[in-house]
Length: 457
Ligand SMILES: *Cc1c(COP(=O)(O)O)cnc(C)c1O
Image (cartoon, protein in one colour):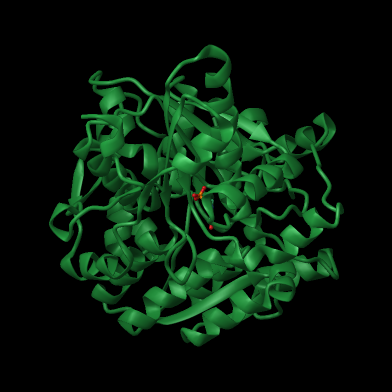
């Protein structure tokens, strides 16, 4: 098929949309390590997990053999309201860069919540409703996950309690109001509502909070409120499973034009969008059917893959969640207050951690100022105003496209554009005013985080 025939945007017909999520773990030889009970240090059973998560989600979390999970019809209907997400051929960017590379991006920022997180929010809310629960609790940092969950809960008629990291609550009043528009209750964290919140406030009066601390509060409320469960927007294997919709759509769209990517790039906070984007491609790689270069991009200020250790750690600061084996900086590590809130997490999804440890993917870290330079460059040529998180992937995609100028290689690059930057104008303002700073943690700071890892033999 000739080059000209590939449209700017490749859409899928409703009939071409995926009907099942793909569970990458089914094709992994080395499976991700099981979650452990934080008290007994024994693998979590499905019953134990079901006390925190909905039963079906606990089942999905533990299943590393079933390759495909049919997407329930009600979720597929919801997906149809905002999916398929466009796969864009970045002709304008290629032209501007004068690169022989062919660049594509999958844009997940077109829904009201503004990111890919809605893909898992609707699934998690659906299973909670199916189980007859009345509500869910969660945490949100920058606000994307809380917004997505409140939309999903409004659609299904579930209560939604969001613990929002206090600095974001104050800095992002618009996100907060979107959540309230969809009926969620939003509490700044740490709060006096929970034992863990009161403890953290006593130890660190005036703290602006952190994601790990908001998770601890949300879990405490879920486990103490009848008919409630806790839901999490990233890190867990079940979230990666739901996000496989991104990669399945991308692959279906590329297959229509016989396009095979050489390089696949995604930003990595807890790893869900990257894990979802690469899922079907990594599946082919694991089965020996194709090979791809896969690159995870993380902030230099929170370098969990590039400078972390692969060890069991708590998923949250309050140590109320199970232990996960992952690349981590230690749950006590508090990353610098950068503007890519969605990437400020100390650990990485267990599935991706195992793939990285097996040498099946690469990781790079980039600094905030260079990320915003790439974001602005991209906005001016492709039109879309990208989220700071997504711009980490843009930065590395541009780097790779520039390498192709030197080598003359016509590589095909696909990257995930996870969200819109409309709610991040405060960050853009800092950048434009020359007030943005870069922060790279010292070895001492990282050693302090590692020293507090739980001892698991
Ligand atoms: C949350 C978020 C991320 C990072 O989360 P992952 O689980 O690593 O995908 C990236 N981009 C946006 C826009 C987000 O909201």
